[in-house]
Picture 1: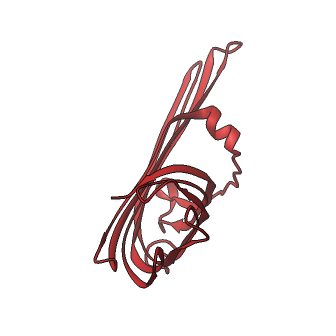
Picture 2: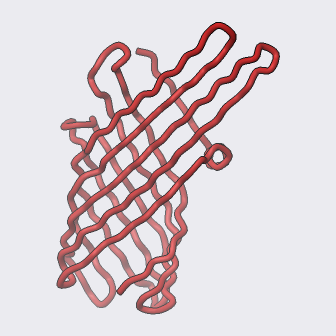
Picture 3: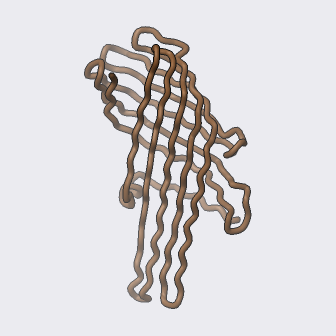
Length: 204
């Protein structure tokens, strides 16, 4: 089965972005037990026409990564904390190609989804009343579903008050997956998705 290396810049992604959305929510009980849900969706599409021969080619990529974790804060001091967490990362990928040329039409859509077990640690440390540092790292897969998956996220936060904050972070998520099938059903996915994040956080 042939493999292809692909390196797509942020500019190319934005040029072909049809729709994208990210969201994160978490709850904390007794300042020790927590749960979080993180969702990131990206829909990319591009097309090209060939007037000389009257043909066209369209390609699309849809990726949904959903992370659900349960955590335990084993250290907490003032507003600083450290947490161990475990859960799963659900991958959903859909790749499509449509080609139309005189006398021939080709259309193929591949959909693959799986859930990886994940464990990790994260924490937040305040440098002052308004500035904080955040970091998170995790690993998973362990050959149970994908061969290996990992995630890392770090950045700074500016806290306007106890409820509102602005965060600038960088996040990367990688996976090495093979469904173990052959022929037209074969699918392998060895990729790293990464980039900057800017968000507003509300706590209550």
